[in-house]
Amino acid sequence: MKYLLLVCWDADRMNADTEPTPVPGVEPPEKESFPWLDDLRARGAWTIGDQLAPPRRARSVRVRGGKKLVTDGPFAETKEAAGGFDLLECASLEEAVEIAASHPLAEVGTIEVRPLWGS
Image (cartoon, rainbow, N blue to C red):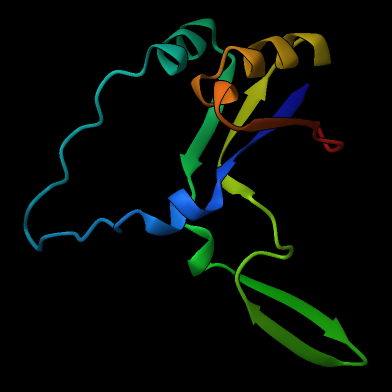
């Protein structure tokens, strides 16, 4: 079954980060080894994941009475915000929770684990 790890941490810290600026004609450096991810890849448990742009870049979209309402930022005021995600293939929710507990950001943020219904 597939499980989504929604990785949340300090929204103010994410908003303070500078954004990467690509240089035309220059390939970005390869990312350094990340032992937590390396282990999941070796086990065949990791499907995909990525870091999200900071909350200041988010837009929340609602449609009410046929009118589109777009607001800046995440959907709720909070000290933590979604900053990344990982999609896992695990045998059970318990296995996904164990993997989430071993995530390096679990010590400073929150890792929400959700099963995907369509898998």
